Image 1 (cartoon, rainbow, N blue to C red):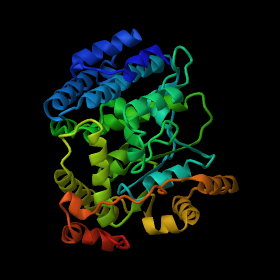
Image 2: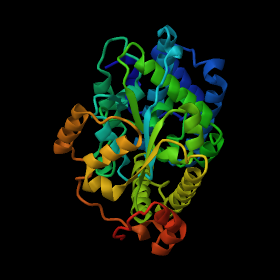
Image 3: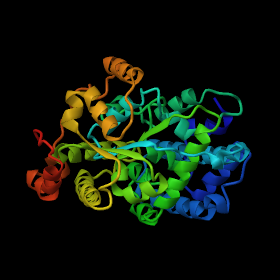
Length: 398
């Protein structure tokens, strides 16, 4: 195991304090360049202080939650220092072009992870594994980054069966864009901890988040064979305009599913992830209301974007019911919509993946709208226009 990350795997009883964590990361790595003006170090330090203060003030961490919080943050900080140091030595990284990436989005729990994993089997596509997003630069002692990140995820509780039954986490799995933005202190942390002050503080940060993501992709592809990036992030449904400023030639696909199934499912995931860090800061009714309001805004904004400035964009809409009925034909249609050739090799690799893929095969979980303070009327009141606009099939709701 790399010594730089050793403290991410041990208990922690200290404060979640920005200066304490920054100092620890510097001591672990022997590095101290946090990015300067080029990577907006001042904003990074400012946001980290707000995040740490918000966690201590409102996250109500358990003892285990404090261990996991420290692990998550120190892994990010050590990785940021090491990545920025390695990037300086990566001649030509800034000149690397990111050409026509394939980027998926859509409502969470609508098959986005399954479809992204399927497309990652295409030899012409290049995803980013979770270990690569978390630890982008090689370890000085040539340690196995995937094995190290497997240990870190387990320590953080992310690979416990009751978590992976809801959403698959694993060091080798293709990861979401949001994790490529973690080193810039993006929106990921609002999932793990109840930190509204932090979420408000980073509301204007999208351009910087995408700039950081682009730079990460440049670094990761340097001196490697060029392939099409295949990424995804449900959160892009909130920021199509910023996404297309960062990647103007992107090929986009969007998953759609009955919000009556999506909203309680994403609320259950939020509750489970928050419970890894706190027993007291998990309020199912509040989380249900937050998710309903957030995704109503997102789908309405997406529909408006599609009708106006997004009308000429390369976008393929994917119905969850089509995806689960015939995954390969769904991929074929998406590729055709986006003018991407589906080769025999790609189709064969995807077919073999489907033979062994266990995504969605976990025992059904018992939860429903009422568990999160919601009912059919709330769903229909918020999402009926979206359901009709995209011809989404209403599923059996609990």
